[in-house]
Each structure stands twice: as C-alpha cells, then as structure tokens.
Amino acid sequence: MFSAQGLLRNQDRRRINGPEESFPPVFADDPQPFTARKGRATLDIRPLFLQPGLISQANGSSYIETERTKIACSVYGPRQSKNTTYSEKGRLNVEVKFTPFSCERRKAPLRDAEDRSIAVAIHQALSSSVRLELFPKSTIDIFLVIIEADGMEGCIASGSIAASTALADAGIDMFGLVMSCSAAIVGSEIWIDPTQEESDAANGSLVLACMPALGSVTSLWQSGRITPSQVLSCIEACESRCTDIHSVVAQALLDNAHIKNTPNT
Amino acid sequence: MASSDALKAATFQRLHPRIYLERFLEERVRPDGRSIDDDVDDGERWRNVEVNVGSISTAHGSALVRLGNTTVVCGVKGEICEPELDNPDQVPNVDLPALCSPKFKPGPPTEEAQILSERLNQVLIGNSLIPLSSLCISSGKSVWVLYVDATVINYDGNVFDAALIAMVCALRNVSLPHAEYDLELDRTICTRPGSDPSKPAKKLVIQQDVFPMAYSFGVFAGSRLLPDPTAFEEPLLDTTISIVLDPLAKVLTLSQLGAGLDNGNHVLEGDARLDPARAKDTLTECINLAKKRHAVLIQKVYGT
Image 1: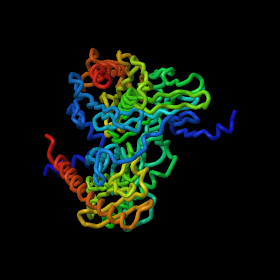
Image 2: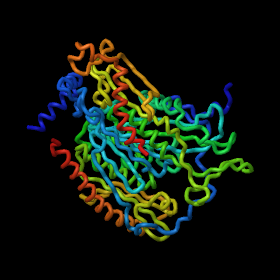
Image 3: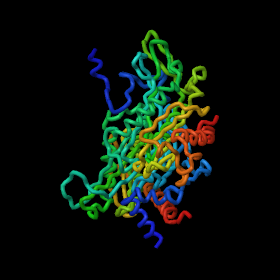
C-alpha cells in the first residue's frame, strides 16, 4: 500500500534510512539562563590548537580546534578546471560540510543552507589573499568538514584560519595569511570569540578577517544591532587578536615545514 | 640531489603504480615500510591503531580512530521515535567527503560510501550488537533510535576496518539522558544529565560477546597477500578479503571479492609455490593472520 505518509518519507536510497519520524530529546527543564561570561575575560579568545598537514591525501591541510569547535580542512589543487570556459584567473572553490553530529540537533544531510552561507563567508575572507592571477584555467578546491560546532561566528573565523593555513601548507602563492576573529555585543560589553550560547544572548555580532602582515582587512561581516562606535571598537579588538593568532599560525607552519624537510631516516 | 631523487620516485609511482609496487614487493617490503615476510612480528605487517573516545560533546557517543594515516571520526546521536516493526533502531552511515581524498567530489554519497554503509549495517545489525530492550523507553509507545554517522577525514585505505572500530567504540561510549514517557501528554520527557541525581544518564547496554573487529586483506598479482592495504595499493588489488572476528576470535562475517591466490595455494615467498607443504588455502591463511593480530588488538581497542 502506498500511503500519503509513505510519500513524505525521506527516502534517500543512497543512505541507510532511519524511521520516518524521530525527534531529538525534549528536556523537562530549560538550560540555565545565561548571565556572565565564565572562564575568560571579555576580550580573550578561546585557546587555539592548529596542526597543518594532517591529511596525507591532500596537497595541503590543517586541523583547528578552539575548545569545542573542531574543523578539518584540506586543499586540492591548483588542478584543471572542469566544465568551465577559459579563464585567465584561477577559481577558488570553498565547500563546507557539517558532520551530522556536529550540532546540538542532528543535522540530516542536505536539510539546510547553513553550510553554504559559511562557505561564502570563508570564500570572501580568502579570495583577496590568494594570487589567483598565477593560476589560469585552474581551480583550487578548499574543503572543510566541521566536526563539532560551537557558534557560527566562531566556525567562520576558525574555518578561515584553517583554510588559509592549508593554502600555505599546499604551497599556494598568497599575499599574506588570513586571520579571522569574531565579536559579539552582549548588553553593553564586547565579547570576543563568542560561543554558541553567548552569541544566542547577543544583540549583534561581527566577524573580521584580515591579513595582519599587510595590515589590510579582507572581509567584515556584521549582523544585528550594534552602534557605529561599538563596531569600531569591535574591529579594533578583533584586529589585535588576529595579530596574536597570526604569530601562532606562523609558528605552527614553520614547525611543520621543519618536520617535512628533515629526512626521517 | 636527494630531493630530486624523491621527485623522480614520486613521478614513477604516479606513472607506473603497478611496476612501482612490484619492485617494492620483490624486495619483500611494501611502499610504506611494512614487511611481507612470513615470520615477522604483527606490528610490521599491520598498521598501528589509535582510538580516542568521547571527544565530541555534541554527540551522545563518539570515537576517533586512526589506522595508519586513515582517520575516521564517528558520532552517535540518539533521537526518540515510535516503535514500529519496520522502523530501524540503529542507522549506520559512512560519509566519504571530498576532503578526505582527491578521488571524491562534493555531492551525494558515492557508490563506495553506499557499499561501505551497507556492509557496516550488516555487521552491526546482523550480529545484534545492541539488544533492542536497551533502547526501549516505554513499551509500545516510545523508543530511542541511534544515528551512527562515521565521517572519513583522511582516506588512506582500508576504511572498512577503521570505520567498524570507530562505530563500535562510539556506541560503547554512548550515554543517553534519562527519559520517561508521559501518558497524559503523550510525549517523552528527558532529564538533563547531572540536573537530577535520581535520574542519571544511562550507558548503552552492548553485547560484550559480539564486539566485532574487522581485518581486511588484498591479493596483488595473484601471488602476494597484503594485509591492511593502503589507498595506493587498493586500486591495484585483484581481490579483497574481509574477516570480522568476535572477542573469542570466532568468525562473525567473511567476504571475499575476487579470486584467491594462484591455484588456491598460498605463496608469500616466491619459491613457496614449489613447496607443497607450505601451500595453504587463501582464506585459511587470512583467518590465521587475522586471529594472530586479533589477540594483540582486541585488548588495545576494547580492553576494559
């Protein structure tokens, strides 16, 4: 029998399917209301761990972890563009994928467009740093897998850092490394690098991407209610954090290059 | 000079992968340095396994497994649904994202991912690793369903073995919040772990005697048996053999795709073909090698 409900089924024959309907657990009590920032000062970022070159199959790769946010990134290319007409400049292609278990609610494949909006933001942050004029007819593919997410702004920021590091690891010409940092306005305070629950409580948020070595901003995303003076102080705070992150990333890349060039016999 | 030699070797490997591998095997060594001799230690025949459990806080259970360079991360999410006869209670899926290898493009699951998911589904469901009673919240009204999703981060061959370890370790790590079915509201209410000491989160009950472990082999050129093949070796293999063992080293699942070694005779060394005393059946040999490795690995991976 073919019922109306049968038509509604999420029948994806290419995957093992679950039941027609299932729901995430509903809790009797709401989570504790959020009041003050715990564990770090308002202008502190979360501790950052970065490891270039973990994915052996890729031309360049990196893995970044800022407390609960965990992102793996790999770069393939420059390789031949497929199905595209001749172009003098190379094409930068960014694809972001969430693992189904990366968020509080399970992310069934292809349900929302959140991954695409993050991909666009990361593309924006990187595109002016890569010397695409050196790669005619080619594509540089940047793939990111978000293993665990804790705040969308943090994902864009960490994702941009991971992607720029992976590009450097792949030996692709750039003007400079792109660093990125996010900020949120909670009450009247500026909180740098907000977590998911912090950005839920925020009036507005901002993601800044810049090249600290050149002192230029590559991308700036602002959403929500923020006064112009707050925007300016957010930018200033984010820029100084980016300079700090830049030295960490540069050191990680240098250490990795030493390991690569030392013969392992 | 040394770097240009390395470049020459890499070019040769890409242009003539088959001859490249043959030359290595003639020297009784595999490209990644493992030995193919009969009398070596297990550690020199198989790649090292590392397991890291419970590092993902958004999943109810998780595991990261590294098998040599192959890296698989698996997360389990529990959801609640109505029990029905044709409703599955565990939904294992493998994702091979474009990130993990240049072989894959972004988009729907590839054929390889579909086959892997189905094979893992058969091992997990077919051996009833998780008794149905442990997923029951209220009989006939409400049950847990477990979404077991494995994502490959680095594809360096033998993903089946790595994904099976990742899935079983993630399931062992699962801790579900306390759930109660409310008859009046006709819905299931959970308690946040840690908020009420009388209603703690519960660990999943798993059949200890069916913890499966997989061991895969490849046959190269009809004469060489390569345990735990890498991504470079896999496309050159004629035959893939997978053996799944339980903790007591009994065979749970066995699959052989392709022909065995020449004449059904096992030839690890070139001249063994001439010695009938050393000729063995391919599958028997694989099972023996798997059992030897199993004795070491079962403690390391599932050790209590």
